[in-house]
Amino acid sequence: MKNLTILGSTGSIGVSTLEIVSTHPDRFSVVAMTAGNNLELFVRQIRQFRPRIAVVASTADIPRLKELCSGLDVTVLGGIEGLIAAATADETEMVVAAIVGAAGLVPTAAAIRAGKDIALANKETLVTAGHLFMNLVAEFGVRLFPVDSEHSAIFQSIEGHRCKDIGKIILTASGGPFLNTPAAQLSKVTVQDALNHPNWNMGKKITIDSATMMNKGLEVIEARWLFNTPVDRIQVHIHPQSIVHSMVEYIDGCVIAQLGTPDMKAPIAYALAYPDRITTGVKPLDLTSISGLTFFNPDHEKFRCLKLAYRAIISGESMPAVMNAANEIAVAEFLEGRIGFTRIAETIERTMNAHSAHNLHSIEEVLKADLWGRESAREICKEMVH
Ligand SMILES: NC(=O)c1ccc[n+]([C@@H]2O[C@H](COP(=O)([O-])OP(=O)(O)OC[C@H]3O[C@@H](n4cnc5c(N)ncnc54)[C@H](OP(=O)(O)O)[C@@H]3O)[C@@H](O)[C@H]2O)c1
Image (cartoon, rainbow, N blue to C red; front, side):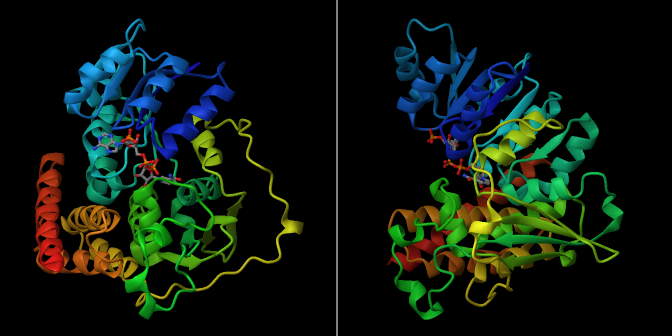
């Protein structure tokens, strides 16, 4: 039996993780779960999975959650202290990091320091603080399993191989809903258009990141840290069918790829049960029913966010944290209808242009850079609105 903490149980990844847990009650049990605003779903999850600890992001919501949980044997906590308590609970062996955005940074770092293995969905932690996280993982001797489907694919494709034999990592990208939209029309697309992802059903923030292709940029940075590979050896191929989840080209010219029906339950299950493979309910792939698999290079001028992510990781130091913060603000402003779609890239670029990158020595310094990026991006968005 593996004891889990799920940070962000009410999100898309959290819900899929709990589906795997409920399919394998003999293998997994939930010690602690955390949520943001969706208390209604959270209470249903608490009733079903009976965690010892339930945490809500805002301390103001503690009384309401306590009331909703009356009669249940659960300790209700809130705020950052609550998230840390969930991440470091004594019985927990693995923490599923599925909070969205830089908000996942502190609890995930606390989990590593407490010696917990990590199933990492929250890519923003590696984007903002990759070098610090990988150092923590080494220092505390924990295992870090990727949940992102592309990184899980690479992880599966390098099993039994040595990182020094990797020639290139090729991340695949669906291209999102605007793959075939002319660049000149992007300024007019609506929030609903952008939320309409062709292949994946995900949370709102990552869905917008997929539409701008910032998601792929974040994944390039994530891959750089997870697989200790220089960024000039990480390429992106557009692959609209989302069947090949990513691939590794070795120095002898051989390519190993991982394929499957696009469903996050598969990479989640692999991270949870590693090295075992367990049933997931994911529809098996029938290659004979697919008319073709296509691959081509992304248009870096149309999808400027991808270009900005490469620029941020090449610049290094505090730049990726600032880029990520500006992206989180710009996406939130777009979702609120306050700025247009193409303003997302513009906000990020202007924030990066205004930033002088500096070294980050601690998580506290990362949080300061994150705050600077948020405040700067907010100001830029305000100017755009007026
Ligand atoms: N969804 C996917 O298929 C997918 C694939 C690969 C990687 N990822 C990555 O996985 C992470 C989660 O994505 P998602 O799509 O599952 O996101 P999501 O559906 O928006 O869920 C996010 C979770 O985090 C909670 N949360 C939000 N803000 C919080 C805060 N400030 N403090 C504490 N908790 C907070 C949410 O709570 P409430 O909902 O209760 O407010 C929810 O439980 C992201 O980093 C994303 O990039 C997702």
